[in-house]
Length: 192
Image (cartoon, rainbow, N blue to C red; front, side, top):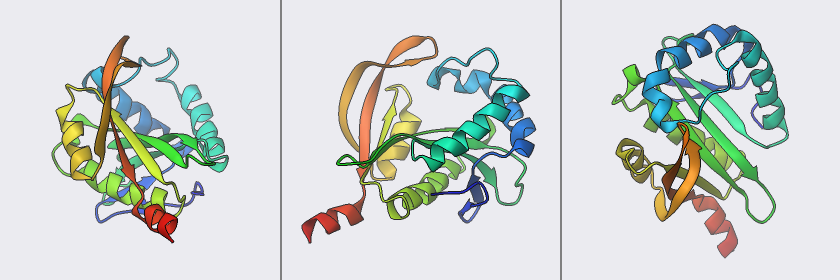
């Protein structure tokens, strides 16, 4: 499993767990992007924008990673490793016969259209498939978020269905398009 000291690196990005010294950057990221991200995210608890919330949250994230419940990471530019530009969360991790998780992500408004999320997802999906050995990653998006739909399609995610009133996002139940990506290595192993 990923430890707090381990980094995933791509050509332009560091993708890692948050640390206590990242809390100012985390608070800045969410404050600066609150209006931009609101249509795509659940409502935030009242203490979300506090240092105390994030101190507890970062500890819980490490605990959840160690127990394989989730893998919640932050995205930083390699050239500016203190600047938080996005989030990347693998949650709903289920082992046993399912071997599946769900990915969710966000990218700051100022960093859209630069290929950062595609790069972060490619790097982290490789880790989830090769190191964590998951068979399947699900990703679901609100139908009006075509940018996300296009990104997932480009990464090889396949549409599996349409779920009405699927998640409570931005204060209301929202329909979602359901997609998934299957680990090609697990298919090969099953055929042996």
